[in-house]
Length: 367
Image (cartoon, rainbow, N blue to C red):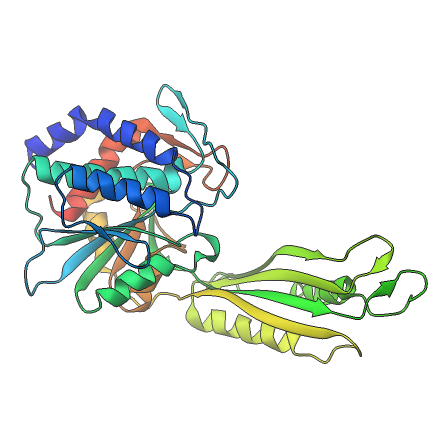
């Protein structure tokens, strides 16, 4: 990395901070990313990035320095957040700590990529290979990785590697945690709690299934988990519940282990039920596990950090990188700043880690 690039980063970090605050202030819960997407597109066009566009899935894309016949590196940051009901987002800054819902996950990543695009244009830099910058939709919750799925399909055969720019800069998601999510619904005739006592209760039937699921022991390695995240049903305290639903999240860092857990779960809900009890199952989404055994991107980031005397901590996680990893394309996920409290109202990041985080990302890009 030349001195000109490092000087640019240090001299313009206030610009990144203003970008960050603006991006945080635009609510974008999963499925409602349109306003933020339009803002990003307008900002890119204001830089002169006329090739930027929004695809028909809602992703913002900017092909940068692409060369005919060559594959590109994809750097993508998801626009959606987990905060459904925040119409106004408070931002607090105290010295080097900035606190705000979505500040790290994933506003800092969006601001960081926009900063890099502006720097490439201002300094007239040429990356070693073409870069497809993307700001995608549907990464969180039940978005089911909608945005990255579309990008990988539309650009099939043209992407050499993927960086899902997300969250913190000093841990690296190099193994994809796969998941399968379901909604289970139980229905019974219901009735009056006194007059119809003995009639099957949908909540009791749901509870029985959940209890049996939680009796299952799982291996520590590969890490595999289950979770019942929500449950609802019934109408009044003196009515036998005629309907109850619950949602289930099954996860593993290993595809075979996830398949075994999924089979157990299906066997469980397919067991015969009491008379007049009906069960239905709805898939809420599926995320694939890794298919890359030797990840060259891990070797690259390890070499960069070794030069600085830093360890490289690789973890398993569920990110946009799941999709390319499942397709055998090298992928990794990391961000720009050290952060904490993601997915909570107390989410925060350390502003003084922006410069080393940005320089690390630029070194990874080969700039």
